[in-house]
Length: 131
Image 1 (cartoon, one colour):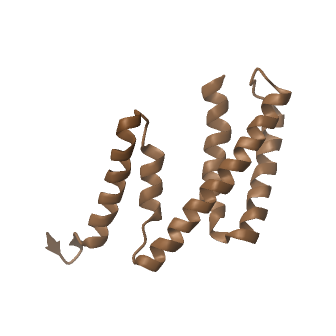
Image 2 (tube, one colour):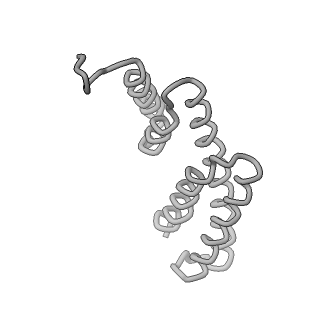
């Protein structure tokens, strides 16, 4: 298909293939591939160098945000083992975003946005899923 504004090229194909392969990897485990597929699409760039940059942002953002969220979640559960929602949760989240920005600024500046997404998902969804 080719039209001045409608063209399916290699970038389209590689992005769709990457997201599909990512979903396929989740099938044997019976897990939901939604966030992995989103990450795969966000990690793709318009060329290889741009893809490496976006992939690095996602990789380091996921790691930084994930580790900070797990640590804060553990701290929250120590104080509130029943998992009830309190303002302390928001204070910890605030601290987590500040820590994420500080870590990212010093190690990988592009990790702030994807890291904050992962931090939010892990911190708030775990509380909702577990309690």
